[in-house]
Image 1 (cartoon, rainbow over the protein chains, first blue to last red):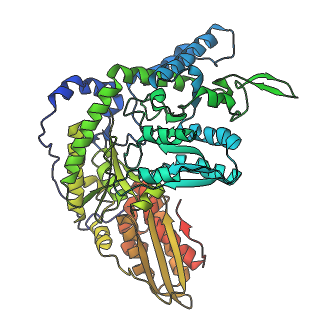
Image 2: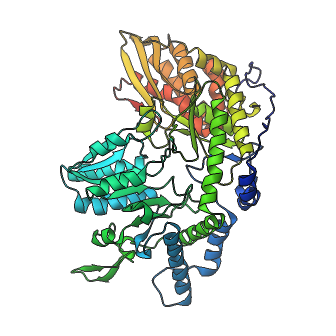
Image 3: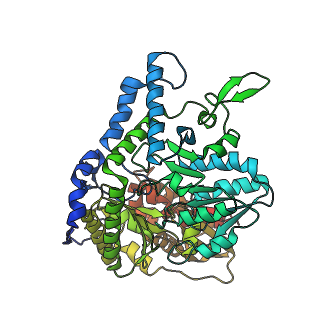
Length: 434
Length: 150
């Protein structure tokens, strides 16, 4: 082990100070933050003997009791395979599973539960569209348009499709504030564009894209649009019919639900016309060795036994969020982000990466001469969980000429006090690094 | 405030991070290998000037976290004048020290590098410390391709 007699820089006994702030009384009284914090048992954990300050919600959010209990309840009382048997338990399981689909349909205001496909998560949802819709409709020389702020999961499936078909991937540029340059985006929509796939909200920058304008511009030329909703869905109301998007992909685990379950929304007419993605049980109506007749929507795209309990628990998460209200959540988180941004700007040597005028609750930043990984380890020692790295968006890091960023991302259970702990931690580590 | 991190961030590490040693290009280097840790974005280029099987000079360029910068800085200091076999032996000992497989590791054998022993308690940071050495290993084996610790 290291020589403990070595002189050491980390001898500061500075205590964490909570800065004074005036709460916005209206929001604070309306938003039941104390109740919400009590609903998330993990928030009582001590990390390195400090209260957990969990600010890595863009990677995955924590789970409320209703979700944890729901999974346990399903396995204790309601579990059997779905769509299979005539026995009571299978019927009960199927009812709950299909009930979750119905909740998701209502949550995003889809027109029909046939349009809600259960997947493993956003990544599988996008891959499904690339391999099913893409292979059937995109040919050599055709173009797929994405933006420069995409997560790898909205880049690589299209690159793979391009390799398979000879199609070309076009990338709409962003500006230094981390916003899509809309005029350039429009210029890239051309006669050969067959699909537009963009993030509703960027995971690395927090930028909320002007998706309604994007969709309107693409639809003028009858080009379908896929929105990667992984980041947007926990932070704002999403209405797929109002957006008029053709596909919307998201994950359960960022929406306070379990990992391993996600959703692909697709317009029914598009889904009907698409070939199956994977073959197997549940996605068929009739199989002989000569030919197979595929099942109807949404089952055509749900081969194999799905993640049953996780789907049902995602329904529980949606009930939980709906009771609070997505508008209230969006307003509360906007207040958190404004406060965090304001405090961060006071820290000398801190640069915020991503300053779009429309932004969700993500604060990505770098510090002069201190690598994000060092920031991550030092904040962890204070009980603060932030993400340090490229956030699966290496092209974004290249654009801003940083190897990585540190990212604090906020959720419904975070508080201004926690942001103070973060800012105090950042100031202290800057002091230590000297 | 950061008491828990004393074993990881020792003053020597801060010193080498602020003022990395041998941070330069060797124009007529005999070996030049890139090291990359995609998870953190640490990138370095290692230069070696050989005299027979003795490392006459070692230097690096690049950017990384404090642990990886200090590790490569310390490494370029310590391998100078060592034979290839001695450097490889040191790599082996360093690797054992940082991955914690041998509790009885002889810290005297690694000299100054002992300041990096603390990473064994931080599995997420071990690769930061070992990137330099994997790159050196590739350079000594005269492998041309870039090295990744992922």
